[in-house]
Amino acid sequence: MSSTVQLFRQTFKRDLTLAFRRKSELINPLIFFLIVASLFPIGVSPEPNFLSQLAPGLVWVAALLATLLSMETLFKSDYEDGSLEQLLLSPQPVFLVVLSKVLAHWLLSGLALTLVAPLLGVMLFLPSEGMPGLMLSLLLGTPTLSLIGAIGAALTVGLRRGGVLISLLVLPLYIPVLIFGSSAVQAAVTGLPLDGYLALLGAMLALALALAPIAAGAALKISVSG
Amino acid sequence: MASSWLPRWFYQLASPRWCYSITGKLIPWFAAVGGLLFVIGLVWGLAFAPSDYQQGNSFRIIYLHVPTAILAQSFYMLMAIAGAIGLIWKMKVADMVAKSVAPLGAALAVLALATGAIWGKPTWGSWWVLDARLTSMLVLLFLYLGVMALNSAIESETTAAKSTAVLALVGLVNIPIIKYSVEWWNTLHQPATFKLTEKPAMPAEMWVPLLVMVIALYLVFGLAMMLRLRNEILTRERRAGWVKELLGS
Picture 1 (tube, helix red, strand yellow):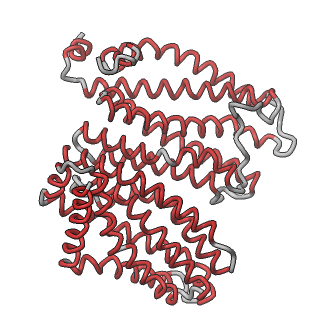
Picture 2 (cartoon, helix red, strand yellow):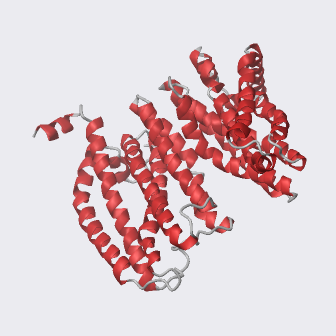
């Protein structure tokens, strides 16, 4: 039992340390998030009324794409230097390795995106009533995105050009999260109760938390042995 | 010894050679019965079934829309189950089944979406509505495309089969969502035509030809799948003695 916890903690700590040593990779998804969100006013219309209607969906799509972009690196460097193989050889379940890596990854991508999101909301004239809904839905939704993304990252880790492929595999599965996430923000803006949407996002998170690490673990084993 | 509770045919299925010969025997039957039922169902549904009291003749596209939609989902389940069998029992034929089903399933999903759009134009007034049933069906198409893309991106055949099996199993989450999307959410789409527990809401003159079409399409696409499977078996087993013998003679 204790060695299982230790493995979880060690992997988690290692991933955080590695991430903080490469700060640019840490910040890139956030910058991407900001740039994508600022493209919409330029490309669509700078009209505040118009943008405030689109804002819930736009922030969510930008967050989704930023998460997707950061997913590819989840297992890549570990795969390349062989440490992934060592982790898989350990007697502890692969489930935990995946879970701790996803948790570390989410803290630095999903959580960061959630914290930056209000800034984007302001940029896109999202009414201030929508802000709590935006933060809460992203807080519940982005871990699900990271967990689902881990499956795609694990399936494509052995491929040289996995970048576009991972989006193709993962984006269809992101659609339900996007629907309920942006609906929650929309409901918050119009003053409707949003607990229903948050409950569904929470349910999806629970499902992903239970099943995605198993699928990602199986995929990692296949990718490494292949 | 460990799993002797499984029937004998299950082990026979694992042999590509046996599978090749059994599908060879089945194909003429599927072609004859499927083709006959297809013609009967299509003519019956399009020309002789009564027209709808609200939608007139435009409802007749149901005879293509419902069967393709049912099949697109069944084929996805077949792909996922075959993939799971391949993962668990390391059965080569199951991998080949999963691989040969995917493009057919994608084609069926496209057909279901296209016929739905054509039907939606006169009845709902628009080609496309973003509601739960339509979105989940579109996700099904994307999942098929993802499986195909992943399969072609991985060079090693065994790794490709295993990886796509995992992806197909993950995507299985979508099947109950499609099934219950018309019950869980308010949508424009009408509820399911066929249920196991109840009689269809439409009169028998309408649903019997529809049932004939569903069975016919199962047979026709089952035939297409077997043809693809045989091709796949020959390609992968090209170095085996029996294939060389078969092609040499």
